[in-house]
Length: 192
Image (cartoon, rainbow, N blue to C red):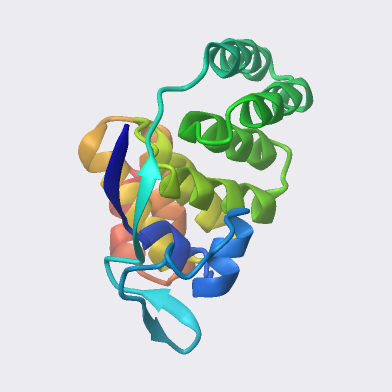
């Protein structure tokens, strides 16, 4: 089915992608008819709420992609991120429009300490319309590792509002606040 999709650039800006780099990092070919939106740029970094408005085919993940995601999730749960990555990359190859597959490639890469690569896949997942309850947690975790603490706090806080009570979220928030020298906020989160 065809539908017009508005894509937010919160994740893209947080990871520091500018407009052209951001789109090419996604592996998207930009024709003149593709980019219809308004891009606000400040010092080479995309900012603002709306990056691109385009007409896209929004499809349900293919059965092959779904099966590969299940296999990869089992590998990830068994602490085999290398094996999981192979399955998740195969899921992306089977269905390049599957946002879940792009997201889980990012998750596996992050578990392998390949955070810059993970970031690109999180951005791709965002552009594909990711709807996963742990998305903001993983984005925040990656941003924390990249020392982009303000952006990490924003992502982790969004996750914490949607999914309260996860101790690791409070720990990561506390570590970010501590890195920024915001000791009262750090202590509050680290003591939760």
